[in-house]
Image 1 (cartoon, rainbow, N blue to C red):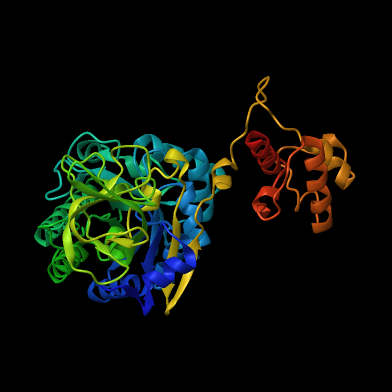
Image 2: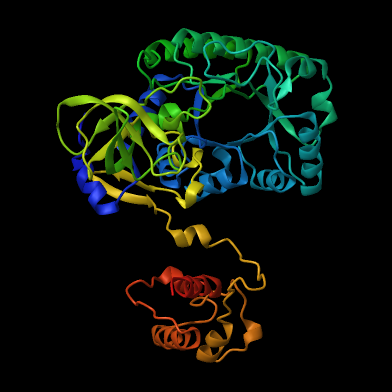
Length: 500
């Protein structure tokens, strides 16, 4: 196991940014994308799926390399746009798109809206007529056959995704019935984390055969067939990554064969996990070591709040992601369980794995964690929050997401003014210092941006609050976050009152 990324040691990265953290290697992401892009036929276009890792710097890196983006919510759409991916390179899927989302998609002229029901198609058609647009649409088909070899099946059985194959084939007037949309093809996404290259190729061939059948039945001029994602990565003992050369050559053959009947069609693929999964390491620091009934435990500063994938909740058998000591080279010392700090017995990241002797302060790395990390976890359980995220690029470590603070967890909450609950009203003090009327101040009023609180006024305000509420304020403990809004400063005053 290398103890560094691009010449930077994990020890130095942890010293600079703290833990827990996710560290991503931009070189690995870049190499994986370029290798795939160079090997696939020119008819095949890659759209990075944001689900595994929507960090805008990761999305922006792939976008800069030429990848499109596949999104499934307004939040992901805005993330892709913020990362610099143009709307014309964005696909959006999802079975429950709101009218707000569909309106933005139609207005922005995204590459295609992946439509999951006839009711959604009618809504898009009506919106398009009203907005004077003709959006491009892919019909998501739920095929009659299931996926082979997938860890999570998306087709072949009752699902909320897509329109059942038999219903699509029976709806022969779909194109004519929706004149304000441009149905350019279909999406057929059958499953995820497939490790057998032969299965990936066989599923691709079946999907393209079905796409051709739907096109003939409905009279669609096919310009795109979206095969979704599904290419897997090995995580556990006994698994191997799929043979890349084999699945690439097989998909290329299938794409060329499909092009003979549909020369204007491009094949869209939505790799997510495969592009970023191997690039990430979840970095944790050991806080305590202990023994319980003959088993050794290392309790770290991050758990299921940031790494539900390693926890494996919902799986039948707990299996360990690759787990290593990052601090230094030590020989293996026997079995250890690595846990997080949460107050739940399920907060076990690695169970009874062979590791060196562990000590408080050690850094532990869980590998292959570039996908389905923080945003796939229960970040706010036990008041923990999101970890930091760091992207190492060109030998420089960049903080691409700040670690949550307790103030971040409270920022969007509002305390109802129950009788006797110690509600703190600081508006009179703020109004006096800033020469405002109390009626002008709301809980969300921003002290700096809206009320123009400067450093001198800040000192005067703190003195007034100390006098009015009989509290002692430690200037070293105050941060700009406390002075963000009237509400955040009131929360600080309330916390000081509770400590008296």
